[in-house]
Image 1 (tube, helix red, strand yellow):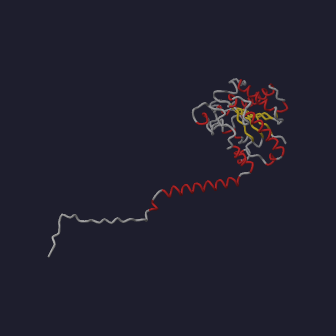
Image 2 (cartoon, rainbow, N blue to C red):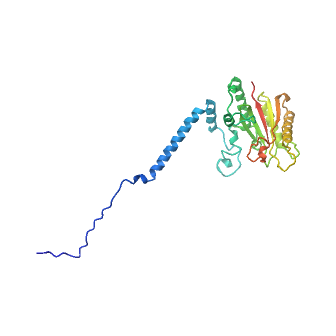
Length: 281
């Protein structure tokens, strides 16, 4: 006996989904983790290489650079950004780490790091460095208080090199060191008084070097050599008038516009005086 099939019952459909586990390597999460790992390894080997390539004195200088004992924004532009308007890489901040070199152009590795020559590591060199640190502390306020007000501090940069302590006095577009006629401004006279006061702390001889920004090429005669020489000698006379013994001045040098401090050779920042407290011994 045949049974009737109910045509109202819906058919049951079974759908089989094929799941493949072989495509997991096409995801992106592992790539991010691997990139972080490679970056960390590169940084680690770079650190190992730097530790092996630097001397103990250079490593100490790096550690001192990151020491938070100096307020970076001591001279503030008054802006509303971080650090009171100053950047850690700003012109008034970065050069004060005590590195760099003078116009004598030492070897490349010393020019970048301000490293001292082996002869400077003698007992006399250690005495010089201690005296230079005291002068820098008074000038830049690294000991907490500066003998220079902020208006003058904006025009001073110091660095210790293989030649000695370089105190750089530079002008800006708003504040000049010399008038158009070549006479010292009140700013420069005040800076000269500061140099004479700090020079009384040490007995090192001084060198005075004059630099100027480039003149337009349309001029028939480039006066940069004469002007830089006049600037250096004029500052020498200012120092002597303020009480510096004339025997302390070892040399007066003109560099014209041959060694600009800024990429733009006509930048007013390139007009500057460098007073070098020369190493003894």
